[in-house]
Amino acid sequence: MIAGGAAAIAVVVCTVIVAVLAGGGDPSGKRGEPTVPAGPPAWSLAAGQWLTSGKGMRYDGTMTLGGKPVQAHLRVTPSGSASGALTAGVLKADVVAVDGVTYIKAGTAFWRDYAGETRHPDYYAGRWSKAPASVPGFDVPDVLGPKSIARLLTKTPAKTPTENVGGVPAYKVRTPVAEYLVAKAAPHRLLSVHSTAQNAKQNAARFAAAPVIAPATLFAELRPRVAALGGAADPSLAFRPGTLTFHNCDQNTNGCTVSVPATLTSPQGAAPSGARAALRASITSRGAPLGSCTASGPVPADRALVLRCTVTSRLWRRWVRAALDNPGSYPYSATAHVIGEAVGAGDVPKLLSLVDRERRAVLRPQPKPSGTSRTP
Image 1 (cartoon, one colour):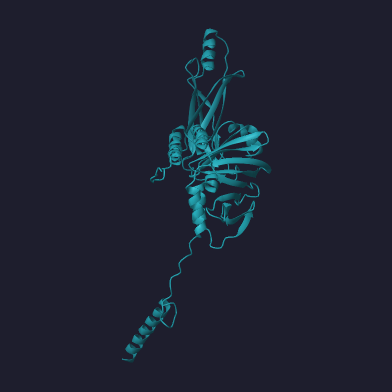
Image 2 (cartoon, rainbow, N blue to C red; image 1 turned 120 degrees about the horizontal axis):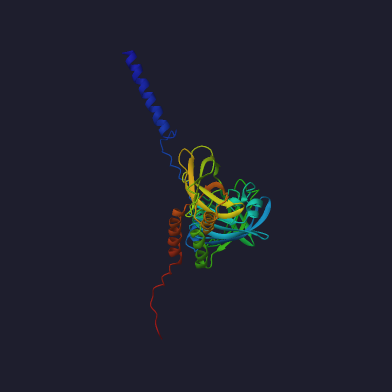
């Protein structure tokens, strides 16, 4: 009996302890109110509404690339697509961004001196290429896109520091990617953007911000650039080419096929989703050009593939006919390189549909306010 009673008392004691803990330790038995996180300040939500309901944003400012100053002029749609240019003296790089990716088109000197491509700047010069991490030093859609900024502003703390921007009182919102200066006065327009990325010291970017005044002009420049992205290169991918071989070339006036095996060497690990390889080959005879060709394809899981393209130029056909009509020695050779490809030709229609859909939404005529008028 004594043992049984002791056991019962032990159970009751445990029950009391659990009840006290569940009640928060308050001897009075009152339950504490749950803590609700404070929401963002009203002005930050109003600023996000101002950004996303507009026609886009224009950014003008400076940045540092390769330790050298560069001027930047960009116009960004509400979703984050962009078009503009970077200039450094007489050098210029065109910029376009769509579907969250930024591309540039520049000459050899810009790729070498500002993009850091010292080994093979000619691989990327004169054509659209995916912007390397150093250019412009941040992701344009994520940092400058109005919708992206509006999302960042929803995390604004209740106590936000302030400063003056050209005499205008402004809130200073610091995020992991950038620092945004937003006017204190309604409608809380965005005034400027400063880069705060890890590489901000090397790519310190400071932009004055203003609404896009002529969105039709922006889309008129943006769409042709997006349409030309088919075959855009990807400098983040590196390949080791194998031995080049010819196929069905001798005495063939229809063309000459070049074949090159290649293996993805960088980045390491599994091949990135959507990674593509592009072959660019050219044929010559005693230094005289006979034509060139290109081909591309997806990188398989084992990172190895074979690329083939066929030269069918008029120069090749004329050269073969001359060789057939005048027997003799006609040596020919080919050079080729394999690089990454960011956009396949088949991807362009999808990108254009994104641009066209947003263009229709942004340029849609605004409904006239309803009401009646009285004629005196």
